[in-house]
Length: 117
Image 1 (cartoon, rainbow, N blue to C red):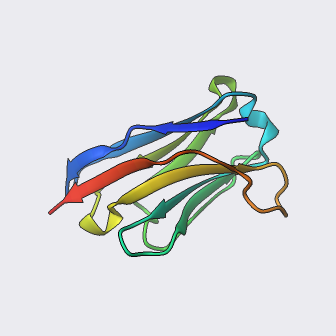
Image 2 (image 1 turned 180 degrees about the vertical axis):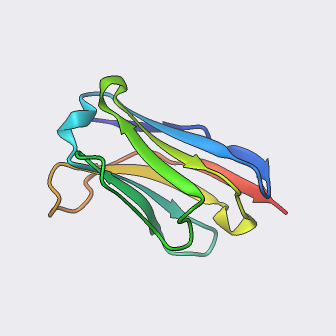
């Protein structure tokens, strides 16, 4: 199953973007879906996850601003990003894993998000 992200772009601080990640196959085959990001000169970090049961987790840096959701019927996972900050600038990747105990093993190609101050 391939994952393809979209929705990135340039936005001013305080603005919003919604990222989408469409699966080429059944999204429901993934137990857990996640959004990662990698900023310039930074290590990749996990931003948010959503399980098959729609349980969610967030990095402390995005809690209260980002919302992750999945729509298995549309084979799509979303990341709604509000009140964006320049430090949110990064390439955002969606990822999936079929078991909660496994590593993420399906990755998208990434979408660039740039937040200007």
